[in-house]
Amino acid sequence: MLHTDAVQAAGKIPIDMSKVPVDMLAISGHKLHAPKGIGALYVRKRTKLVPLIIGGHQEKGRRAGTENSAAIVALGKACELAEQHMDEENERVRKLRDSLQAGLVKSCKGAVVNGKNRLPNTLNISFEYIEGESILMMLDELGVAASSGSACTSGSLEPSHVMRAMGVPFTSAHGSIRFSLSRYTTQEEIDFVIDQMPAIVDRLRDLSPFVEEG
Image 1: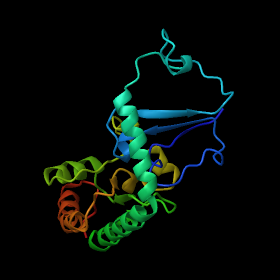
Image 2: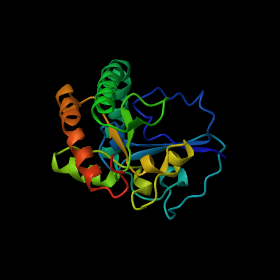
Image 3: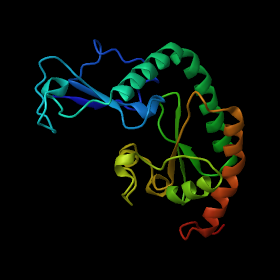
């Protein structure tokens, strides 16, 4: 039995279930501009599934509870729009992501890009000797939203096990943050982040007890 979490991929790259050899695949609406709180689980035929919520006959007995029809329709429409504009938007968003990447690597000492085969809209980048959470707090004060890890590990103080498995040094793994772009991201927003990040990194490094003088 194989399940895959495809919430980041849906709407960003083509997903053809006739070519994806998994039994179950989950997507989340808010990742492709549908309302928050709606998602979908693909279950391949003849896959045995024990319901978590029982009591009703909704969803062919797989999940009891009244369906949120409005949100379901919105998710379907969001998927339709994402498919229509996928190639065009990905080309534009990829250029913005690459612009952000090049700008941060050039202007911030000790910045290292994590990963090579990536979605076109994401940039995971590490800054040595500083905490990712501290970067996020200073970005938040400027109105910039980013992430220091996946939502399912946001309560942990340990560096991402994925970063460690990729060979990212401990001194950098703690300073990893992820920028996620969308069809609504502008070049002005990218330029703003590139302009603000060097001062944030320098300030936090000055406060870090792990940076060697000189």
